[in-house]
Length: 77
Image 1 (tube, helix red, strand yellow):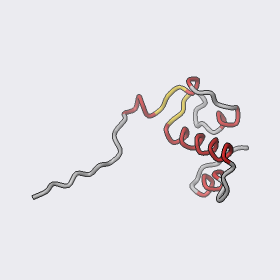
Image 2 (cartoon, rainbow, N blue to C red):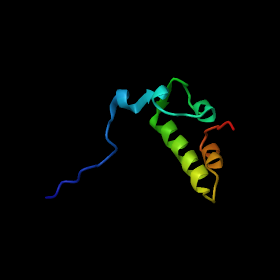
Image 3 (tube, one colour):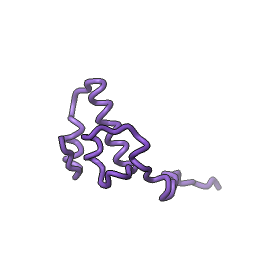
């Protein structure tokens, strides 16, 4: 009988889940998005990357700031 494997997200561990923010070229506005200005986690990095892509490509549709606000994240200008 075939066995089903659940392919969840890999456990990257605490050490890889966040990194020092000094390793990245962040603007002052991006640094304000961080919960702790000295560290950046995967969720914050994904948000910053999405904001950069939206600005770079001039994407239309729902603004990422509105999306984040709907999901409980407050973004400062």
